Image (cartoon, rainbow, N blue to C red; front, side, top):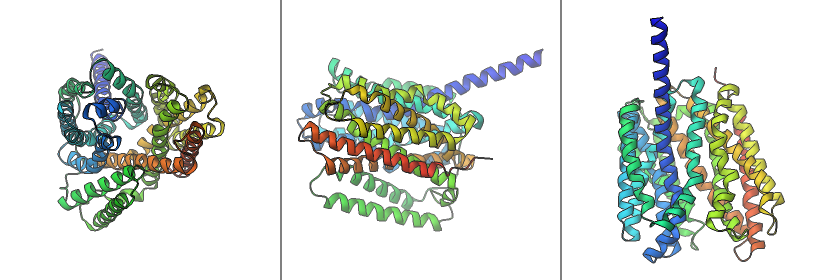
Length: 464
């Protein structure tokens, strides 16, 4: 009787610990995602307050994402060496400090620099939260946990724009940053007490490798972000080319180094490689839609910002509702099946919008396709995460998480860029008819990228 009671207590404590691990790792992901979304609805207020142009304002938006992509792998390497929880908490601290600086900024240059500080902190929050969660959860339940993690992060897509608009309307744009401070302090306190510590590789990071990956990532992501917003393509093309050359140099060094930052042997696993490429295409399609869908609803549908947020719900809402159940399906049926079905659903949803939408059609024509695409994303995301992280040794989960997130970020930057190119190739901003034509081209491109992802998802091998 006593043995049974002790066993039940252990199981109950384990469940409580698992719940806290899931909450605290999801919170870091939510905070980093929220900050990339909440600023979008405050952009007009910031531009008016500082009396700056749209092109100048864009730097306040891009600086955050570019910094995340640039320093992500360096931060992950530190986490693997000195402790994932320690670096996770350090990331939250830097992110919170950057938020304070953002709120106190009195000019655009100060705000941009503060966003860079935020990005440095956020760069490790997502991959380290993934690594901590994956390390702490048994493999049989990992898909469910990653599904819930994805759903909570996806919640930022829903509440971010609406919350930002509400705060700006009722208070001031500075408060979109002040709200991070108490959340960050609470997250650090409980993470230090309740999250397990784990390490991966204890190898020292080469300073040259760190410099190369930072400059290469920053150059490539910046050029992809900038190339569609300037008339002179020379500078973005030159920066992107230099970034690509530095990236090739970095990869060559990884081949010959005894202790590389990114062991290229990971890519010998077809599951790891194909999972990352499918992730790249999944998010390339998604971010192209994220960029144009709100504009279409406002320009062609004549909706205001708040109504637009509500009209996007059939798409983004599925991330919260479906992802946890999709995670369970991954555990039961395997990563290959769920990822493939997810990419099919996402591609079909975007294709139906491209086929049936016009500049006079009702919004309700889009509801079912948007929900279908959202269900697809909610299924494929957790499945591809589990496939990539499960393809490496447990001690390499942190680095695998970093690589996964680099593919996700690069996919988002590339998807946005080529979607803008497709939009202007077939449409323009002149009138609603041409805007619709360009939007349909962008949606068709998103469908094609999702379909290409299927080519790689079907190559994922079942883990023995």
